[in-house]
Image (tube, rainbow, N blue to C red):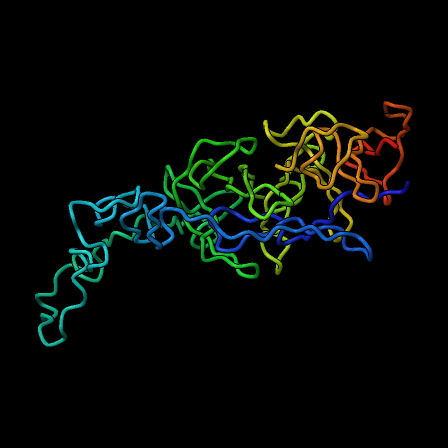
Length: 331
C-alpha cells in the first residue's frame, strides 16, 4: 500500500479563532478519488458579540466586556440600566449656536466630544508600536493586562486587530474563550472532521516562520491574502502524542505548498494499529485512519522504525520530513 500524508491543509483557512463568525477546518485530500474532509461549523455565541444569548445567561450584550456602561463584563444588566441608551457621559456635540467664543472656550480636554465613552476601553500606544491599533507579534500597542488579538469582524481576506483582556494560558493550554490565552496567543479551534469543533487550544502568533519553534511547528496564515501574520501549529510527537493535551492526538499535515507540519487534533479514538476505522476519530494516539483500507495505521520513524504485527516502516508519498526526522507508516 502506498499512502499520502493524511489530510491536506488549506493554508489561510486552516485555523479559526473563537469567536470569529466563520470557522474552517483542515481541507481533506485534494487528489482525484480521495475523500475531502473539512469542517465548517458555525461560531459559538459569546459575551461581547452584540447578540443576547439566553443559553449563556445573558440579559444584555453591548459588544464589549466593560463595567459601568449598563452591561457588566458577564453580559448582565447593571442596575436596570438600558444598555441601548446613549451612555450618560456621551453628551454629543453642542449646537453651533451656543459654542462660546475663543476667549471662553474650555480646555479641549473637557470638550464633550473628547469625553471617554464606555467603548473606549483602551488607548493604543502609537508612540512605540509601528502598527495600528496594535501588533500581534511581537506584541505592542495595548495597555497592561490586555493583548493584541483578532477582532470578531475579521474575515478570510481581511484581518482586523483589537486589544482585549489577556489570560494566563500558554501555547500548550486548552481554552474555551479568547481571554483564556496570554498575550501573544489566541484561542483557536482544533481541527476535527466532525461538524462542530469540541476543543480549542491557545496558538502563538507569528510574523515569520522562524517565530515558530520545535519540529513540526509551522506559521499558518490568518488570511488568504497574506502569508503573515499567522499562528504557529503545535510541535508534537506523532507516536507518543507528547505536545498535545489529554483528549487529543498529534497528526501530520501538508500544506498546499507541500510544507509538512504537525498539530493537535480532537479526532482521537480507541482503535489501535490494524483496527477498523471509518473516520480519524476512531483511531488512537500514534495512529491515523487510512480510509483506503479502513484501518488505523501506526506512525513510525523511517527508515528502521519500530512496527508491530509483522508490518514494516514505509515512506509517505511525498516523504514526510519534519526537522531532522522522516516520518513513515507501518504496513
